[in-house]
Length: 307
Image 1 (cartoon, helix red, strand yellow):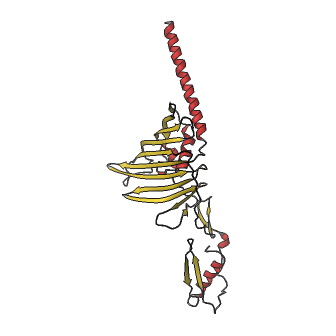
Image 2: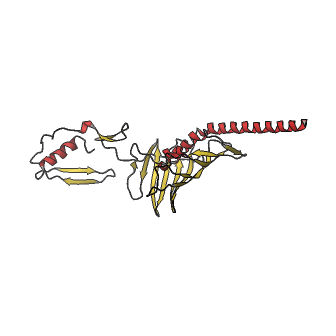
Image 3: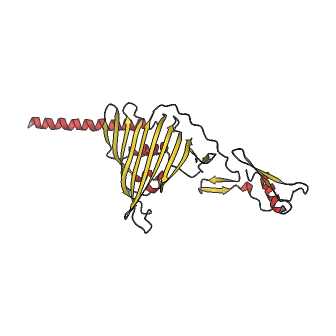
């Protein structure tokens, strides 16, 4: 009987030590993951499936490209929607998002107040909340650590709008390099969950979401140089008001009365619209047929209203 008690005590001690060791390892990984300042290649697949009463439709999205040591990203995005494939180049520099469609000459910047899914922000969102979850399981060997557990679906609502106001657990698996614990080799989040009550079918049917998110990172430490795309400047006459979340007119470009007529009757008026890519559009103004309109146009142009 004494030997049985000793054996049970030894087993309990070993289990307790193993739990403490795993917790220490999780804490170490959590600390290491706060530093994502390393370059790498990333492949990011997100598929959201919708189903209700016999209807089923999936919307796959692929993002593939390189991440710099600063956390900037350059690559492309492909969205499949109803058998159509929509591609666009994308670059994220200093948290500013730029994009360009293949048939366009110029890049554009995402308007202030808008957001788009991109891999580095996704990773930081997951890391920020992951280690607050209970019941994380750690599997480790000499080459990699595998962390498994549940992940709150609503956390991802900030970057995947359809998950807002959901309250289910998704299955998560995170694999990091055992030696360089900040290096995420892969991250997978999957699960079938009820959609939020505000997401329904056309006749009010309850919707089920099928979430499949897979991120794979390779080529750690590769040489990555990302430049900020050149984009047209913002209009001077209006700006984005962060307090109300929309664009408003600048008061310095508002006038209560029409300007004094300063047109020269001996001048034939033209306007030049200089395009961002170097082209020029020449417009003949009909100052004799519409003098008030032309005078207003000239006044606004000279005061930078159209810049």
